[in-house]
Structure formats: C-alpha cells, structure tokens
Length: 160
Picture 1 (cartoon, rainbow, N blue to C red):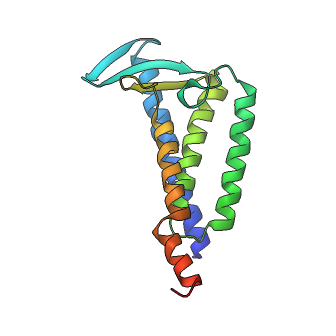
Picture 2: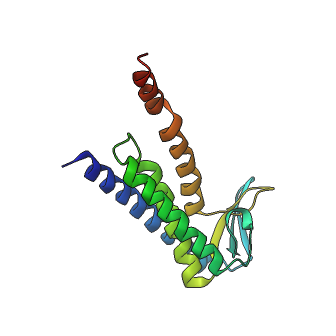
C-alpha cells in the first residue's frame, strides 16, 4: 500500500473516531443534563449543557448559514493541504483531528442550529470534544509544519 493511501486511511480513522466520540458524549449530555443546568465534577470542572450558536468561545453567535459556509471553505482548504502534503510525516494526525472536530460541530449546527458544549472551567467558556480535537489539531499542524520533521527537511536541503 502506498504511503499516501496509508496516510489517508489514518486520517480517516482519526476523523471517524473524533466524530463518533464527540457525538456520543454530546448525546449523553443532551439526555442527562437539562439545557442551562450544571453539575460539579471537580472543584474546578463542571459539566454543563449549553447551546452555542457561534464558533469558538461563542464568537459570532447567531452567524447561522455564514458559519456553515466558512466551515465548508475551511474544510476544503484543509483537504487541499492534506492532498499536497499527505506524505509528510504525521500529516494525517492534524488532518484527522481538524476534520473530525469540524464535522462533529457541523453535525450539531446543521441538525440543531447550535453546537452542544458541556465542559466548563472557571472563567472559561464551555467547550466540547470536537473543540478539543480542533485545538490539538492546530497544535499538531504547527508541529507538522514547523517541528522536528520539518527542521530535518530544512537541514537536509541546506546541506547541514
């Protein structure tokens, strides 16, 4: 099997795992916690049930169709990046995390008009599994683009 195909299968696997986990946990939250309610888990962590009509940290609340269009464009850009960089070491990881997170939140937005958020820290907006995947996906993307694998490529190209 070609390295590109292996990378694509890995990205698809991560995407699927993120979407399934995100949707399963959100379904539990919607079934067990009334909208607006909260339950203390630890002194600094609460489970809540909030509906977010915006994007990260509730920015652009009420953006509706415009947010869906933006998400589709961003997803297309991510797929284009992956297509051109699939053979780069670990490129599948940020791709899978970012796609899984985007799809998980898009499922909510299209099906319910808002994203279900449920993890709450003091002085921090509520978030969900998809948001965690997106955050780690961005960090992984930075690592893939500028971390040790990329540093070795630059050193090899400069003869160092």
